[in-house]
Length: 261
Ligand code: NAP
Image 1 (cartoon, helix red, strand yellow):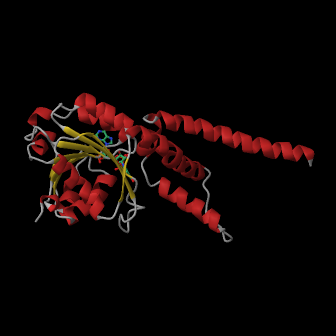
Image 2 (image 1 turned 90 degrees about the vertical axis):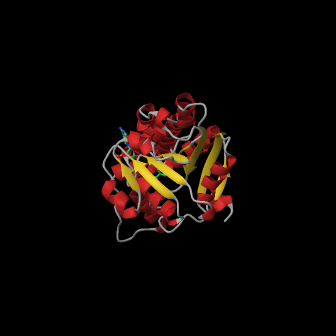
Image 3 (image 1 turned 60 degrees about the vertical axis):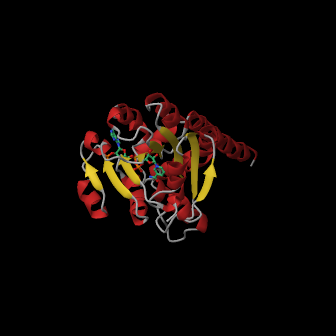
């Protein structure tokens, strides 16, 4: 077997909905998984064949090749600052984050991680809903921030290549710029539609059905996730202003037209 197909020991910090979704595929590919989290996920972990540790100390002693950070955006700082890094067995462990914003975790991790640890910032652009039937063709965005052990890094990236993801290497800056105008906008419109409580009618158009689907899929993600997209991406804050302005412009056009009728 070539080294690129060897299985990895992956430790997950933050075993919420997204980590659980990723874990199913990681286990299927033959990787050895362990996890720790704020809440007790030991029952589900044991069903998935994953070692779950309530305390981070024992978790860190597991000698992982990769530590995958899957906590919410808003809790990342608290979580990483509580990691006792000196307990890590491998001095050059690869840290990977999957947060839906990228400049924020990169800067925070560069501050907090010991210099000897490698860092790969990623954003799988799919989740339990959109990746339910497989990851083929779905974008996987990544930025190699500090990689010295190329072998471990490429073996980690191969997890997603093997599932047919579209691999997109991109700077964290470019990611946040594009995500603010796409993902954040999508979530915001979905949340607005949910606030309006739109419901299917007996005469739905295709367009309206798309809006219903959008509403239903966005509210499945936690408010922590959505607020993290806003709080930790300055460009998202600008996009919200642009959206408000655009709504006012459209409304004004209608009012102007009404006046000349
Ligand atoms: P989330 O609400 O963003 O995060 C849930 C996770 O954060 C859980 O593991 C939870 O731990 C942990 N957490 C929350 N507050 C905490 C605190 N104060 N201290 C310690 N841990 C805390 O939901 P998610 O969908 O699972 O997303 C996880 C990460 O993946 C996020 O960074 C998100 O941006 C990213 N992501 C999500 C998707 C998606 O489709 N959902 C796609 C790509 C990337 P417990 O479970 O132990 O309570």
